[in-house]
Image 1 (spheres, helix red, strand yellow):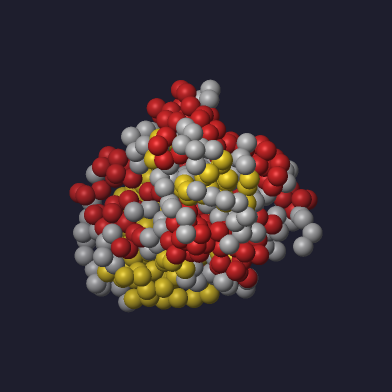
Image 2 (cartoon, rainbow, N blue to C red):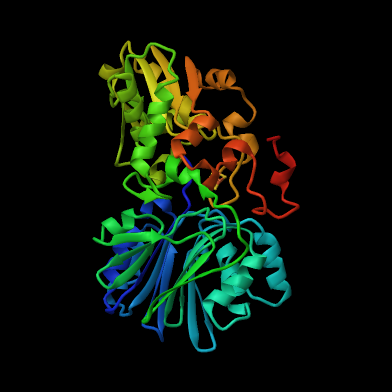
Length: 465
Ligand code: SF4
């Protein structure tokens, strides 16, 4: 599957003023969550420096000369746009304000579902915006909220804001972490010696030799200062609704998220998919790299060989591919190298984590046949995607999702596949275990109650339970 990713957060509160390398490394480990822009803010508790730009983490940090900066508090962000226009440097994060001689900086992963309304209200109050990002609204709401402490401010903020927000902030000499009351997006607290770290995924701790302590709880605001950790609850009590897509696709396979080992989870989904197999298969071919763990689980359960019938080219960038837009098949052939000797005369189970529009999967099926596959059976380790996400994943509209208007046999026909088998919603729920704590709205079109504004267009399409 190919979806634009979302955003990655990393932050550190240190006893020393040498945090630049840790900040850069931690964010680098989260590069998969956004490749459009990156940025950081470093503070010594009095002064704050921020640098952000379009580009990859290593390029932006080098241009921002992060290594010469001194400070013991830092936040960093890597971005793929879900709100606001994408390729604009002013939409990169963190956002920074100075209020009453105090620097405040924010970086955000998620999507505010009432962003337009919040922006209108803030504009009516005379707020000047420098970007089209919903994160800038969050910052203004925070600084305008009554209260002497971050905890009190978040309580007010939560009464106005709907949707998904995991945030890290610097407020004066404090580092702050908060997660919306549903807990859509992950945020984990870790420790390296006497330093505290925060990250979207535990993979960012591994690269630093830091240990995960625990996840920031939904509806929790955690303040870190020289006296240690101060935790408080804020906002309305909501049922936990962690994004199941983080487990299916977005998170790095070496991360542990929402109490799950991501790699093991994907293998379990693949094995469950294999239990449904009704066709004779010769080889199992993963769609690289997203389908790999599921394909492994599938092949082991069926006792069929896992073969790399498609190899990802690691030397091709988006800018090189763009001029060849005219043919999806051509683009796939540039990114994925089919192995004729592996595919020739084989009945192939092609395993991927999910299908969005279906156009890339269709091109892959075409390429496998072109290189000799006798049969191509598409096996998808998640249920059909039928509804867009409003909580921080950049998905196409409902009409563009291949499964929103087609039955499974129609999808097989569209793909020119010999068969298509998905995991059902119930099977996914079994694989997750504590399914009641997860959002699965893109598979059900049932958005968590209270997560969208009353007039939101998605609510018109609500499917019966
Ligand atoms: S709608 Fe789907 S992608 Fe969005 S938060 Fe829910 S499970 Fe995740």
